[in-house]
Length: 88
Image (cartoon, rainbow, N blue to C red; front, top):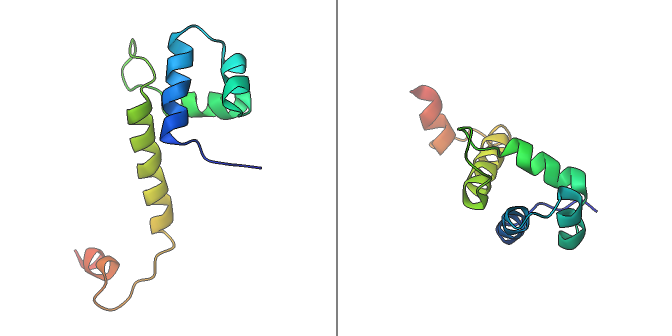
């Protein structure tokens, strides 16, 4: 079954990686497939090189992507937020 990573899982992942655990071992301990964690690290890579994965930043990036993705499916209703922003 597919499930999103929670903020707590991201924090645990970060701690395991800092402790030197391999991605596969961290996946086993967290109960997720290693490819899920690999995608997480790739999608939420730090902007600048030399920085490490930060779970708080990763969670904010994920929330922003979800918000943008769901915006496409919102109805434009008279007087609604989308109608006002589309007129700008």
